[in-house]
Length: 254
Image 1: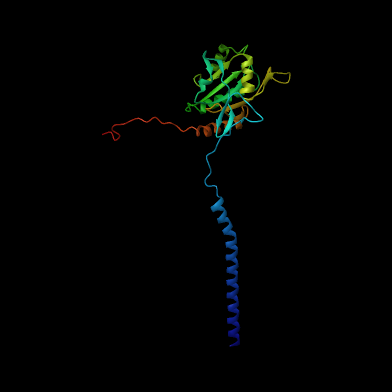
Image 2: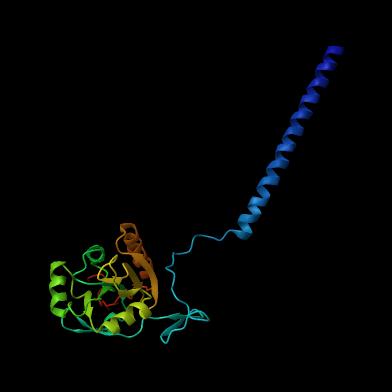
């Protein structure tokens, strides 16, 4: 009987120990899961929002501009109006790009360094965006004395430029310098012995349909050019397509 009692007592102790262990495990589980559940319920931000392309140059105490547009309670610098002679012989103005997203660069046809790479980068974008009719390109020469519309036209032909969507433009050096430095905030100055004949920026600029700058990209860096391509598609999401609706009297073909 004593052995039986010892066995029963030991069994009760084992059961009590197991129960206590379960209680401790349950308490730890509750202590861990409740805060997590509380955080997820009250602080979970929900599904990720659609990506956005940032805007550049808000106007305020540090920056002023005679050309601006208010978007969501913020005043933004916009690209000033312009008028240049295009390689096609037409006058190219800001109205040429009305309701268009466009990519800008500054180059010159005799440039031995970065310009051919920048042109090739935009050519790649032109080919990848063939079906995106609301995306255009604008290249300004910084050597207007040599780069006449005729010279630009030969350059466009040599590089397979689609003249309906990509405009090479020339004008006075003063107006080109103003557009580079004040319009797009890109450097442009005479070259030195250590630079090209004309020291200009190698960046590509992304401009939206309100002429607000949305990005800067190194035109000689393939990764950065790919980032520009991605940003163009993201930017297009801001402008829902307006599908043309046509009335069909017999939708079932009866």
